[in-house]
Image 1 (cartoon, one colour):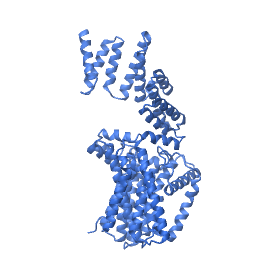
Image 2: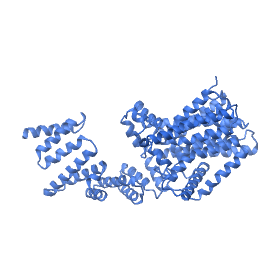
Image 3: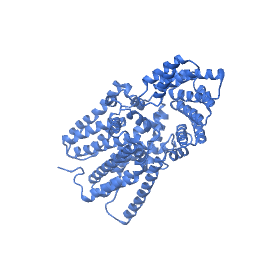
Length: 571
């Protein structure tokens, strides 16, 4: 029985251990990092609430249908309570596994081309493990989707190559099972089916054409089922529908945008700098590079079919990212993490180019490659440390993307956490001025109100609130909460009729707040305000409800009981 790596030598086993150690050394700061302000809080909040497993596995409960990914987060909560350090460790370990898979696939590519497998496989794995575009996916908890997708896709392709070389039902079954897992991790795995076709066309082996075609039919089945599933359960797969939508696109403009995105991602794989988390636009001249990729692939296909197939696989796996850029469906239309799996494909494609004979020219080339890898490792370490320092992270992001309102909003939040209130106010004001996304408007307005509250400008909070909402009923719970807090602080400065009027206004706000966000504390607070305006009977009702509904350990439960006793004795 063959081992996991086809009985690779002790030297290669030691190299794999060294490779894992290198990845752990470069990414160790991630283990000490907290959750990231973008997307991570939503993940932690959702799964820390211990949703039922049916909500995870069945469609209709979330924007995307990604049950394997969601199950991993559900297990994070069940096993270690969403501990950030452990979740970061999972990402790093997934990157280690993917690096080892690149090593195995690169060895196979070298063997097929008649090249010594170890040097090419080793350098391909090193290049993938240290490529700077991969830091975003590894250092960000929310980036796990790309790591898991890559794990399943690379594993499926490895089993597929084994089946093509010597058809065994076990390898084919494993390939299909892993492809299904990839599809249930992230919908962009639909493009992985094309890689099966490419490899079937170019990879030698004992599987005859008819058998290959039949197997490809089986490979296509999971993707077709996922599409049918999306059509049947639209509410749970709205992300997939929006992702593939072509509504509102102008054909020539969309083609130009697609070529620019394609050229941009190709350039990023060759020259990844500058690294940026918030990429909102790219130079349209990248379209020239994008247009040149297909002729270049055709030229390479005529000379080295296997390597061309792996480069074409990278192209296929980057197409979903191109669709994101054209349809503008994500927080940013471009992202480095989308290159994680394409980077693995390119590393495998490059492996057979690594010479096995050590001539002077080859030694010089390998020395330059070594310098490049050391530089990449230094960049990765610096970048991982930057992901750990959230304030420095967003300071850099606004420098790299000075016209992106959302990133100023994130910077403002970090500045506020660090007590830099005036700078936070300036950042939120800039975010409001630059914002072009309706989905961000209320969040930015709430942050403007929050920073006004932090500056103790309570009347400004009220002014901002009614500039944003014509009626209190239109406001969300966060904004209503800020309004009642600011108005409550103003009460101490008022007297007479003004104080009574504002008190009744706050009571109205608390009623609306109770409708939008269940919390018995609002009942307790309403009781206090009613007591302040002399309505003891109604105050007693609110204190009674607050006492009955409050959690046993609520800080206001005992005071509510004391209020009830006093009001009872007074009556």
